[in-house]
Amino acid sequence: MSSTMASENTFSLGKRVVDPFRSCLTPKMVEALVCSSDWLRTEGFNFYKEPMEDEIELYNKCEEIEI
Picture 1 (cartoon, rainbow, N blue to C red):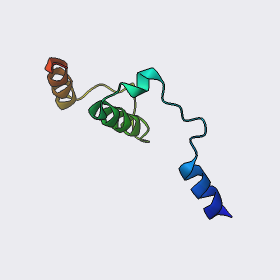
Picture 2: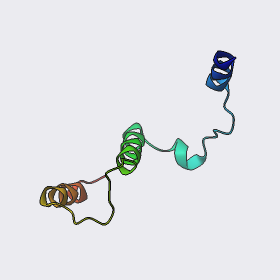
Picture 3: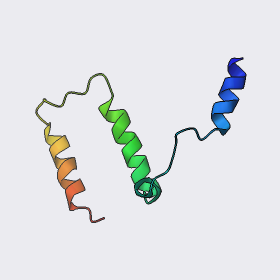
């Protein structure tokens, strides 16, 4: 029975609707959002810790990149 349900879910759109905002995301941006989501959900992540020097350098380099 579970294999039937799995295949139904595979071919069903259900409530997964692509709105105008999501349809304009580039593949690179989708990848960045997925990676960010995974990173933020890790158990050891703490929003309140002081950033390390290498994290600050990376942030500054990212800010310099033109999109």
